[in-house]
Length: 276
Image (tube, rainbow, N blue to C red; front, side):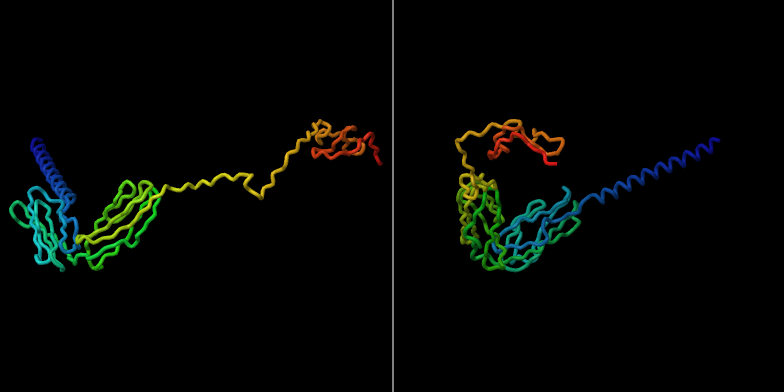
């Protein structure tokens, strides 16, 4: 009996140990599935000559180290690097690849991530496609700009002379805030630029003014006279007329001066003869 008990106990302990091992393995698998791999904030970048951009790397643990390098330092270089980010500076027209190398605490490479960089010539001129713009309070509109050369990726800068009247975002979207006038300016690195004059008006009401009868020549207003109106009596109302049971015709009480409300005079009726 004791031998059977010891056998069952051993089997129970073995199964318990196997269940713990399986649970730990599953937790590691699920953790690996949930954990995110390193990634860059951008994979393809376009810059104008002389401009800079900050490249960032995400999902990096504190034990990892990151190094950045450019495949063509004549086109773009790593101006500075700190932690999981670096600043790229465009030097001349062309293409290069920025590589971010992630290493663990033993200096073993975990992953390599690449960003393709295209450098274009700087813009030589910029102007608004529309020189004047009219907006109502609360409206927004993006005004297009024209750059030369068209191949340049230089981003123009926008500014408003009076942001309380109309403000402008970094992509050229103008938003009207209050009635008035202001000037939106656009410029590039060489100082060239253009202006757009913006006029902001209050929102128009959709309510139409009420029409006066006196001002409408098509409406005839009845003239009121000073003659007194005859007082109506129950005998003048058709609802109070009496019906002759022998003929079925209606007759009014004799002595009435008016047959209806229009005031048409009739002769006095003293008797009504019935024709069989």
